[in-house]
Image (cartoon, rainbow, N blue to C red; front, side):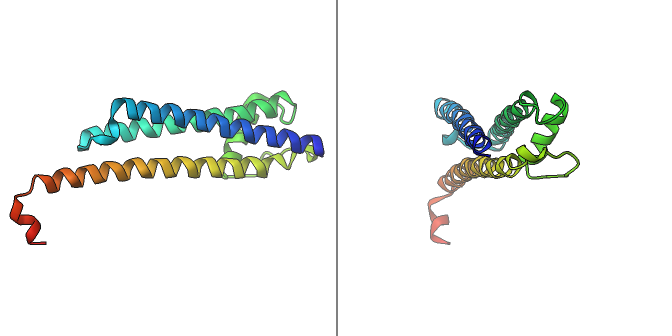
Length: 153
């Protein structure tokens, strides 16, 4: 039981590290491109799509990491089942059609908690970016108004 708990801690640490590295790459790219200082429908649409794809790739890498663990440690019979189980567990879908054997079953709720936290972190970052783009858009819209329009509000 203690050994499995230590393995679980290791899995969580690596998952969080993967997420932080992925977000660091994303933030550096956003700062380098000065994407957060811009606005415009097509520009923002392109970046929201790219942001979504990058975040999904980070989560898929984390799911794959857990799946690799399940498969390589013999927790699940094959790689496809391990990836499927990890995906439904990480996302907290939890169909229950595949379960871990007794010695490993506490890993499932730990993966679910970790996945929930990582999805929440991604959602928060996504929200911050979209909020910044909305603020830029509103600033550009009000800056182009005639001077008297602000007095009418």
